[in-house]
Image 1: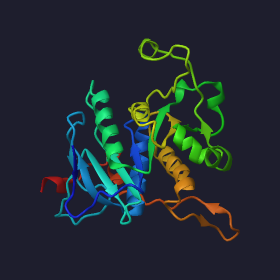
Image 2: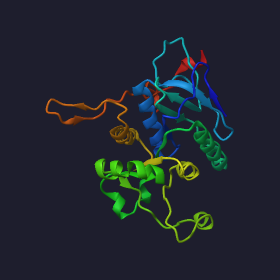
Image 3: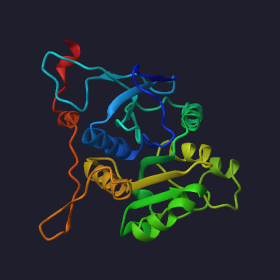
Length: 270
């Protein structure tokens, strides 16, 4: 169920939806953290579903006074004032065995909301790469037919992004549920990215995935955010005195100070 916060509208026909998948290294979720924090997006709603494990926490983006707490839940929806960008942030994993039911509900919600385009941010296991994927850019994209018609030249020629290499079926499940003679979208570790893509492929949908391994994946999150920014121009690009481009000035979320065993925010229990 999607619950819109009172006072906000759901007029998203001209909006781009950015949605991360719970995937290896949580790269998509970390990238979305950067986008929400930097653009200071407003929380406009919540997603409640039996497939998402229930969690609560304190506000991950703003530094609050020591005696205040602002509850955050497992899956929330953010937008900018002009409603041109809508971002889903899913913080909790999906219950085992419920990927299909949640993907179906989420895809139906996406279609009902009539987004202009859908951008799925995810990551994939680096140890599953083939030879041609080991060197060079680690970003791969997958486009639906309508997204390809609108943006293929931009992605592949101007931005020089690489389309994901197709691979043959590699598991008994894929062999049973697909045409065995057809190449597969192979993104191990990417969560429900393929599920959403396949259920929404009549829409303009783009998967952006980085190869990575578990660990400190902040550099990959920044890289994925930078790639997205070269297309959508979410953050105004900067240049040095010579005119050479500088890295985007992403605002680090307040919650990132609490990672790697640095304690917990005790205001949650006040």
